[in-house]
Image (cartoon, rainbow, N blue to C red; front, side, top):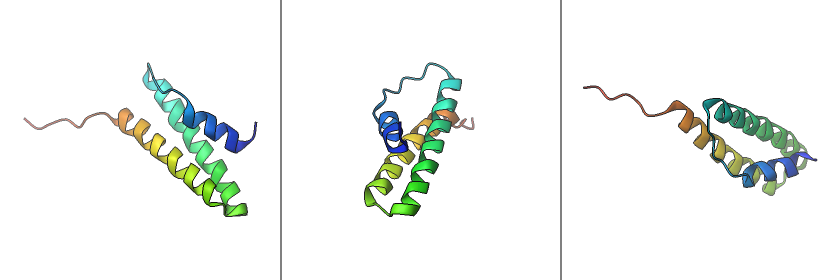
Length: 75
């Protein structure tokens, strides 16, 4: 399976993480995919690859935001 296909499959996957370790693995997978697509983008300069990287980055940021949790409030 080539990198773009893997990235599209990851993007369309249903995200319902039961554990923190699932979230960590998904964030790492997203990061790896973004870096692989970036290498392709450096060679081809295709705008569609840039759009794919942006969408993957948004998904990764949502996962990482969920990992960090809510900040504690001062009381």
